[in-house]
Amino acid sequence: MKVAIVGCGNISRRHAESYAAAGAELVDVADIVPAKAAELAAKYGARAHSDATQLLAATDAELISVATPPGSHAELAVQILAAGRSVLLEKPPVLSLAEMDAVASAERASAASAYVVFQHRHGSGGVRAADLLRRGVLGVPQVAVCETLWFRPRSYFDPEWRGTWVGEGGGPTLGHGIHQIDLLLHLLGPWRSIQATAVRLDRPVEFEDVSMASVVFESGAVATVINSLLSPRELSRIRIDTTGGTLEVNHVYGYSDADWTFHAVPDAARAAQLGLNPGVPGNAEAATGPDQWADSAGDDVPSNHEAQIQRLLDDLAAGRSHDTTLASTRPTMEFVTALYASAVTGTPVRRADLVTGHPFYRALRGDVDQDRIDAMMRI
Ligand SMILES: NC(=O)c1ccc[n+]([C@@H]2O[C@H](COP(=O)([O-])OP(=O)(O)OC[C@H]3O[C@@H](n4cnc5c(N)ncnc54)[C@H](O)[C@@H]3O)[C@@H](O)[C@H]2O)c1
Image (cartoon, rainbow, N blue to C red; front, top):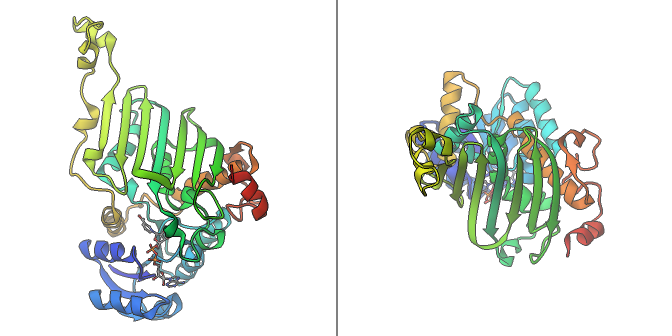
């Protein structure tokens, strides 16, 4: 397959390496900074362009990665889809539900498709967890915890565009926690309502540097979600307590199989059946039966760009539908939107509330002026 990349900064290298590893041919790249396009093009024998318009006029690539800053994703995706090429959008795919719907409408009008990079759906642990939970093999999810506790020093916000609604679109909820939020929703299914708090404790930003949410899912499961940029020992963690045990992944920027654990629920009835006194420490645990999690292990595929891009190309080659379509990421953008709406307004937000005319449909800051946001977020 022939592929192209728009935006030749940091993360474009992961796209280029992953395409090469999957046997795809990188034929064109573009960046508004010509030296960046030239450097990536030289490494892979691709043609360099100064913007997406020039690239689209020249390329015969079927799939084009967009690895530019988030504010440009929607416009570029619409342009690429209108040119009949499929697009792989870096996270966050867009900055608002309005932008997401604009890209979805361009996709409907095109023969091509839109996909999103959420690589944590694609490591072997995530694939197994989603499959086993969907089939009920690990029990029914009841309680979950989703943590993105990362650290970005004040100097991270030195570039002028960082820390601003216009430049970044939002804080750690949108830019950082969105990875674990997407995986949580991928594992637990549709959410119903959110009550959230977002605060600015330290960093020089227009939005939050920490956010927290209580979430109720359609299934009745409940979760807490925290996103922080103030946490020196970084971790990314999802823990799901089901009727069958506790499933947990604990990593920072990418997991492998070793980062996943499943502790089956102690089974006192089974211990008694087996003639073990369930009151004796260890007997109930010893009688938990087959270890469904360990038994499902296969090849260990870490959750990185290579994992997702390999699966995407395999799916396209086989004519299968790919897991991480634009449409499949709408609940994640709805979640992020509702978190901001709840934090800024101080009221719970239901997923059903997020209709086209909702005040936060067009922007994560809603229709609220900066003074009020400052008053809400500064403690
Ligand atoms: N999936 C992940 O784990 C992951 C990790 C890091 C970054 N990202 C995402 O990747 C995207 C890019 O991040 P980055 O760290 O590579 O940023 P970056 O600033 O290093 O690179 C962005 C590049 O895009 C170019 N650019 C800007 N506007 C453009 C336009 N309209 N047309 C063509 N080129 C344009 C810039 O000149 C720059 O070279 C962001 O959306 C970010 O959130 C994802």
